[in-house]
Length: 393
Image (cartoon, rainbow, N blue to C red; front, side, top):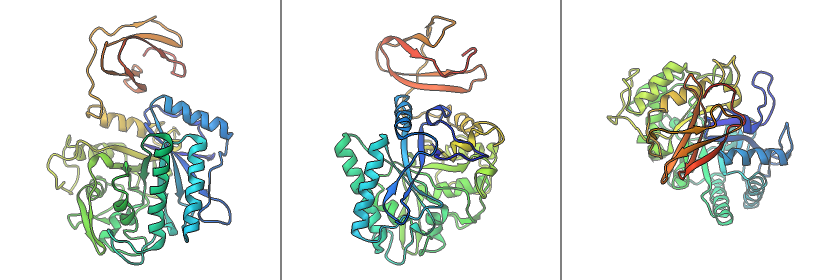
């Protein structure tokens, strides 16, 4: 999962949306923000292209089996729903954005003053703005699903203070996302807490852990899986299928919390039940969480920069971490797979099994994945190789 900047940054330049590294399965477009003078009437304006072109790029990614979501908020945009009228206008404007670009769903990345609690509990919040946000998301999802006949994807990317911070205090920003997560847990597809730009945080073992370490990744991730006690009641954990680990692509991508790829891989291996304990924190669940959903980064643009720890090093680290983990689709090798012509141009025909589904992965000679697509197996199948680098595959 990667966030994609809708702006050009000198250090992390704009990338054409449908030209990002194919290892990103979920692309989160950043950001829909309130129009000037409001805190609730949302807009999304492409900064480097037209609406029609960006909508086509979204469709191109979806044709490759990717999901593309629109994120609301970000670090610099405050979103407040201070009346029922503002709630309804928020719903209307967000649905218009989703429809205009054909997004698969919504990501909630509200920070700063956008979310705060003054009373109530996790299961029974009393802050009107939080209640309206929950109502608004439910209405957007209901409307999307009614109009499209398919599930609306919902993800959230809160900072640690808003989630695990509830173990320290319950008020203001501390634990402020917990009532939202709890109310929407049946709708929520992925919770990807930002394990960066964070102070030290409690783990569920009572220890205190510092960002940028394997212990921080492991302890903060298990807190969202096992749940924990707060001043606002018990937060019940989420299943591993709903949890992704959120980390920055390199030092320059965040104010703090970058963790080198070897440490990340060690922490992820332990979480997945495939590696040794990398630090002092001991998982409460023996065997780890093999069904953990994946990894998220801020951001794809940063990951693409060679100066950012090597071009697409985050995507490559993800691929190495999850390459041997069984996901949703069972994989079986096809003996005697044929491809013709060989060598080929922009198209190649491959022989697939007569039944079932097949995952076709194109890799370079270093074993790096260049493209992956799922096909209903049915014998000979023509595949488009345009856009792949030249050379042996």
